[in-house]
Amino acid sequence: MQRPKIVLSSRVWRKEHEVLLDYCEVQRWKGPGPIPRELLLEWLADADGFFSSGNVNIDNELLDAAPNLKVIAQSSVGYNNVDIDACTKRGIPFGNTAGVPVEAVANLVFGLLLTLTRRIHEGWELVKNGEWKEVFGEDLYGKTLGIIGMGDIGSAVAKRAKVSGMNIIYHNRSRREDDMEIGATYVSFDRLLEVADCVVVLAPLSEATRGMFGEAEFAMMKNTAYFINGARGAIVQTGALYEALKNNQIAYAALDVTDPEPLPKDHPLLSLSNIFITPHIGSATYDTRKRMTEVAIGNILAGLERKPLPVCVNQEANY
Ligand code: DGY
Image (cartoon, rainbow, N blue to C red; front, top):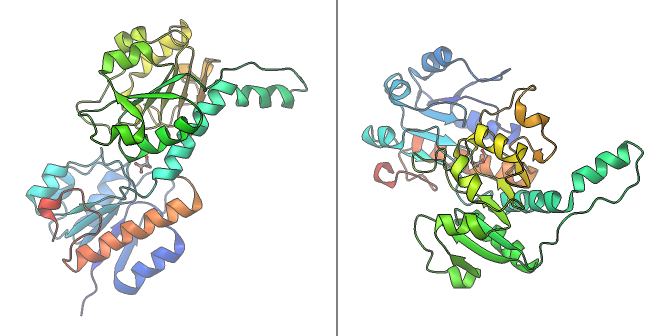
């Protein structure tokens, strides 16, 4: 019997990749750089499954080029690169890894918050340069943390902030019924910007959140405010953030995600002294990435057999 064919647009971990080889013909892009679009469409022409990565646009053009696709799985929580309606219309279930990297991302975001407020990175730079000087920062205790996007990751960050003695406010599309349990107070977006000492962005990127932070929003924030983006770069208007930091309209920013991503070496943001950037490593721990790959492969194998994907975004199209 002919084995199903799957296309992988990026690397996966070796052991898990071997599991796929037991069941499927695998065509895998090994880089360098992202797979050229034309080649990807060519490979997908007779593919049954697609193990995609966040840097591939999954749109009508791609789906039209892949008439046999039974399943698409991606090893990430975010799926802003995917036209979910287009997948659903074609009856193709799309699986992500929701729930898996919660603790890893929450730790990174809280780590960024601590690094910024205690200037840990600045202290290390001084010591490396032979200067043994105190660097003064801020306490978290008694400060107000404003979380934009109180999903699983937001509440895991809130838990960490709570034990550090912070007051927590949040804004979401709608109020969470369990916010008392989390110990967070629902406020309007504007109110959050006005009163938060630290603003953390964890909302998914959608048409509603794209460019959500621009000139007006930074102007509403305290000029002592710390701003952290652990979600997607395009939620923030990069030019407006640059101006707000340069003009000390806000105090400091830490980003794990940028727009563009990656940032070119000569990008103006990199010339500022009140910013700290990590290269999109929220979920990058060995255990978490391994588990994410396992979940994505579980989704692929289920879809190939037309069985329900264990973690599926468009349930309407799930088997
Ligand atoms: C996610 O899972 O969406 C992380 O941002 C990694 O891409």
